[in-house]
Image (cartoon, rainbow, N blue to C red):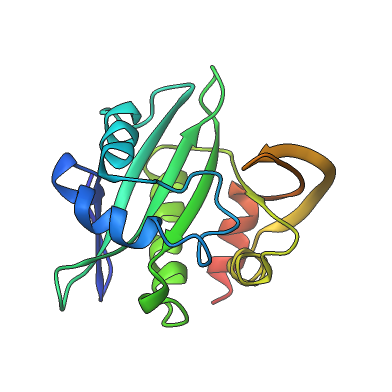
Length: 182
């Protein structure tokens, strides 16, 4: 899998990406809503090795990196969780280096990945799990076309603290309706 937009290349994560990923993922303030913040380079290596080497495998996470074509540097990553045994639903999550936020990279890369998931992998539903305090991510998924489906109170234990969880979802037919009207 390799996807391209005007500014970005989206490809599977490799062990060679570990240093760049560690550099932005270790930032505890920027990534305070993330469930995983690496303490050292070894944590990143373990993370990369745990991700599925094959896309579209039920009950696995597949990780891609977002590369800026101009600099050839990694600006972020997207996790894709192939959630169920019938393999029609996925969960996605995006992490962006703070130096590349508010430049449209998350929107551009997520739109491309969502198109791929619906068009090439024939998914029916994509969900995103978001901390209610993460207003930037909420605005991002709503702008793309996700709708809020649930608010679970203190349903996730993250970094030793119980936090709320918002579930946003996007159905294939709604994606096509929204994008045919653009």
